[in-house]
Length: 184
Ligand SMILES: [Zn+2]
Ligand SMILES: [Zn+2]
Image 1 (cartoon, helix red, strand yellow):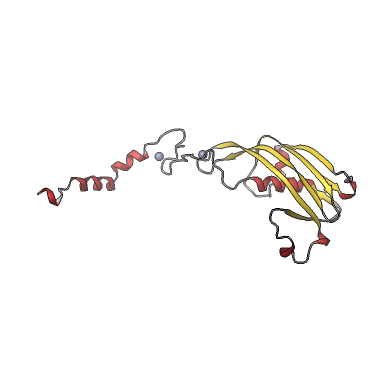
Image 2 (spheres, rainbow, N blue to C red):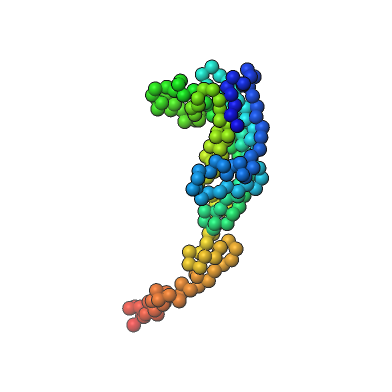
C-alpha cells in the first residue's frame, strides 16, 4: 500500500488494517530461513501527519508470533507490541551531513521520494526490527542436554548420573580413599 502525500488531509490520515501470515512472509528476504508464524493476525493502526518538512507516522503494531526458544528450541508465542514513531524526510531535503543532523537516535528517520509513502515497507521494517534476536521461553529455561538432546524443562536426563561413572569421577573417589599423611 502506498499513500500519496497530496492525499493526506490537513487533519492527518488514520489507517487500520490487519496482516496475515502470508502477507508478512512476502517481506522476508529470499533465501532467509526465517518463516514467521502468526498466532493471530498483526493489527496495525497508523496515523499519518503532514508537516512542512517531513511526514510523521505514529501508531501501533500488535500481534503474536510463534518463535523458537533460543535455549530449548521449543516454539512459543511471542507478543509483538511495537509503538511506531517514524519521521519521513524527502530524499532531496536530506541534510548533507547526515551524521550531524540526524544524531538524535530517539527518532527514527527514513527517507522517501516525497510523493508517496510505502506503508507496507514501513510496517514490515517495524515488525522485523521489533523481533528479538534471541528469545527465551522463560527466564529460567533449562535448555536441552548437550549430550542426549532431552528437553530438560520436560524431563530429567541421566547424563548427570553417568558423569559419576566417568574415569575422572573414579579418580576423584580414589583420591578420597587415599590415607591422609596425618592418619599414620
Ligand atoms: Zn526454552
Ligand atoms: Zn542428557
